Image (cartoon, rainbow, N blue to C red; front, side, top):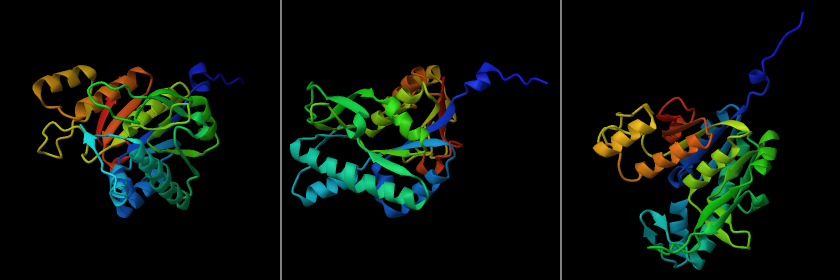
Length: 268
């Protein structure tokens, strides 16, 4: 008796979860501990992308360096670049890696400069000079895939490089999105953005008014009606771009729901 296996089953992609968590979650001992426990229990391949802005602001202040923000984005001059490189790539990243090792997760902390995994260019000056801030050009998916296939879990700091010897401060949401897109050819990717709400809300005053699913057409209607506004608009625009680039699913939720069972789901 001959058993036939379909081509679809033969070439089925393995699942990969890319999770982005904000600095507030990873900078406080209680929330970090809970996150690491939940992350360690996730099945399959996974990547963690983190922020660390509050720690950077605190350390900068202790060093007498003023933090400047424009529309929620950090102005990164040479002194601040030194701070964020130390804090994001060192203090925050290695605390997460050590915590994951304690949970039996073989984690490896990375900036974009490590193994040349993410290369960027310095953001051009338009209305605002953001300084040493990077916009992503390329993600080396093959190099990351080698790690992932060896059951190594990348923990990615919000730092990249320009290939000319310069580090660049880079938005963690962008790193998560670009990484997920780059790996979507090799894996069935779910991208999860964690923030302070349970998901995208139909009523900003009601934390339980989570919109469970959003299509691009529905998103445009919500924006026109003013239901979705502010910083959620670019977050969802990035989500739809990720879907169009091959990411299977994007979820916006809280850090205590990274199992993908709750929150707002964006699918193509």
